[in-house]
Image 1 (tube, rainbow, N blue to C red):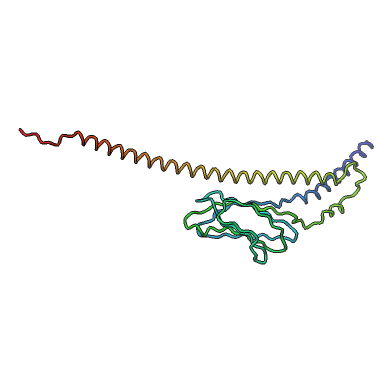
Image 2 (image 1 turned 30 degrees about the vertical axis):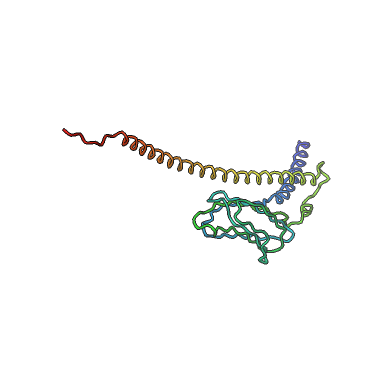
Length: 227
């Protein structure tokens, strides 16, 4: 029984070390990507704010999914109020800003349209927003000589997997937005084709009726027969 107890003790220590390590590694897996879809009424402007840190990066990508013209005005302003980027009547766009401390404002403007509302999708990607020292995890690691593995290699592998998964999620989100916009455009075209097809059918029936009436009127004998 003694060897079994020794084996169980060693196994417990091994599991404890791994659990401590993966708890620390999990702290670095927080996602800083987010996406939103909202409806912008006609004649309205909607603004959003994002708090950023110095030497970080803010990337925003937007698309107009539905609405007449599939266009919108867009601009980004710094914490000091300076306009960094602006787009006029565009259906999509991508902008990246190297940030400083403060709140960044980005606005979607539909005031040029008095009738049509717009459905807008946008995605925010925030980089270098970590507040923890990347080397802080070393304080929680004990007894690394007991294992034949390097924590740095595990960290690099997990970070690579996380980055690739995040990129895959981002691409899939953008593709879904493109798909939604294309589907809305196809449905709009389908309704438009059906409407004008019905109009053409009605016009053709009216023209046919008028032609039949005119042809029959040419062969009618309007002379009155006397008895």
